[in-house]
Amino acid sequence: QSVLTQPPSASGTPGQRVTISCSGSTSNIGSNTVNWYQQLPGTAPKLLMYRNNERPSGVPDRFSGSKSGTSASLAISGLQSEDEGDYYCAAWDDSLNGVLFGGGTKLTVL
Amino acid sequence: EVQLVESGGGLVKPGGSLRLSCAASGFIFSNAWMNWVRQAPGKGLEWVGRIKSKTEGGTADHAAPVKGRFTISRDDPKNTLYLQMNSLKTEDTGVYYCTTDSFGTAADWGQGTLVTVSS
Image 1 (tube, rainbow over the protein chains, first blue to last red):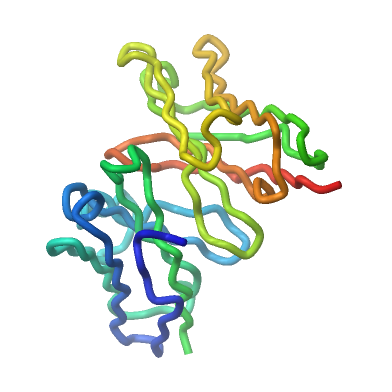
Image 2 (cartoon, chains in turn brown, cyan):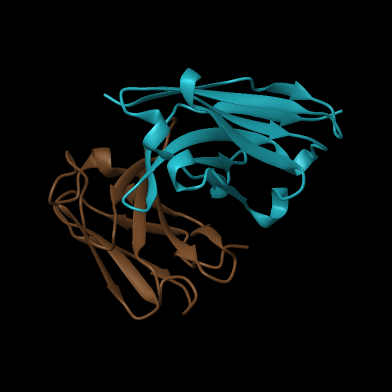
């Protein structure tokens, strides 16, 4: 069972804004930065956001991240059909001395 | 362009061993920290472990579920990362990804190699 908690599913219509939450604790999100990954169907995961709100080169600014206390969230504005897939948050955990991933959120574009 | 190509996956019986390789190119491998991440069929991502660059000690950290059974190592002249997996269990079944470690996280990912542990 993941220590980083994400909703199992999220959905929206094209053009809408959706947010995905990630809840942790003081040993992970509370003391380290949060990263987000996108996994489109049948493909390897891709880094979408690092250090809470930094986008790697090539990631559109429709994607944004934030963190407050022991929670973080990923926002996707101007939702597109090609955004459909699974989204994972991740953070280093000081107690486990390792990386924790959230359980993943399946995003459906209606 | 960063390229990571995993190999060595396959079918193995419980209790068996397997060694995965990850051939890296497009960046200075010897300077890079590297990770292994796995994904069970239909499930989420799970960090397996990481290895630091030799200039920063070259030590490896392994996740609790694999500690004592799996070992991450590297061969910098060959630009290759390894994952030696011993005493395999059915729950080790999944796709294993090799990743670079940049910005303090798994950045670039390979396409993965499938490991199936079954009798």
